[in-house]
Amino acid sequence: MPKEIERKFLIASDDWRREAREGRRFQQAIVFSEGPRTLRVRISAGKHATLTIKVGIDGSTMSRHEFEYQVPVADAEELLALANGNTISKTRYEVSHGDHVWEIDVYDGKLEGLVVAEVEMKSEDEKPLLPAWLGRELTGDKRFSNQALAQGSLGANWRDAL
Image (tube, rainbow, N blue to C red; front, side, top):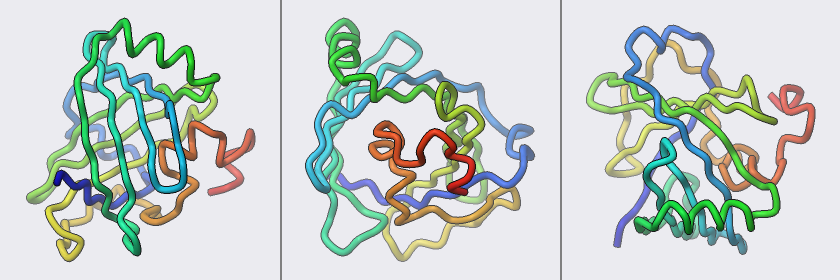
């Protein structure tokens, strides 16, 4: 069964940009959510689309079961429209650091200015080398899940939540 094991951090400085690969633009929305179960639709660069099912694992703040499936872009666009405005737009950059690839999400729209880094791991015991440009750890802070962000978890004045 596929698993996603990740840690999430705020970004403290723009130093990551010197080593970042070219960014990819995403639009995504949570189509359905019930407790620790979500169904997300995502369009990448307007050319590729996926549906992702995520199911939380009891007691873990880092791990979830994750199933991802390609879908036609036209279907994904229709699902985005049906998501009742709970969409997120962001550009994702990748930065290699140590033995890991960090994904940096630069949000725009209602979350413009929010920049978050995630690192995926093979186990919860893994200790990735933390770059100097990281800020406060957000792992386990449900307000910063993409699901919660799409639903306005940080409110209109989201900077105050930091």
